[in-house]
Image 1: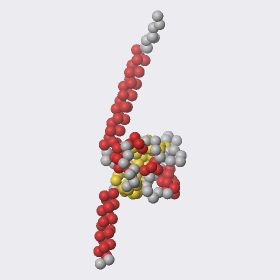
Image 2: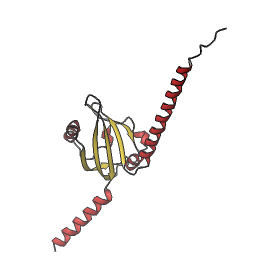
Image 3: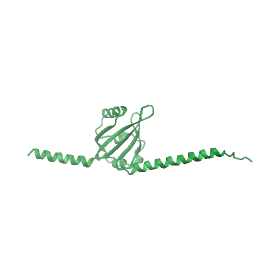
Image 4: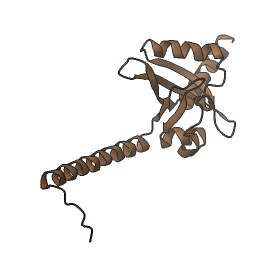
Amino acid sequence: MYQVPRMPQQDTRNIEALQAEVAQLREQLALRDQALDVTPSHFMISQRKEPDNIIIYANRAMAESYGYEAAELIGKSIRLLAPVNWTDEDVRQLRSVLTQGLPFRAEEQVRRKDGSLFWLGMTVLPLRNPAGQVTHTVRVASDITARREEERKKKSCNNSWSTK
């Protein structure tokens, strides 16, 4: 009859310690995911690929603002969520800024899944690998439509006063 060899006691403890460490890391990741999903700020991570970055994480606030489920965005080109009037030159400029290790900030109009428009205030940050290459980007943003609409109303009001 074949018997399964028993592991030495020390090896068993090492495996148990590793299992405990993996369980702790999983808990920490789950907590981070939960924290990112309850924040009202938009949060997205994309992986740098050619020709476009690919979305690998989008929190609930970002997905809902655009009219998507977060799972619908994963694996899609970041251009799906790009500002309405962006050109290839705008994309090159963004990449240049990020390659220099600098944050990119902008207020842009973007399109929801249903075609409606809203304003987004965003900051895009580069993430580098140990060799210094930008491999991922993080985008933190918020819907600033209400603020932009208030600014437009004030400007319109000021213009009508100045023409009288």
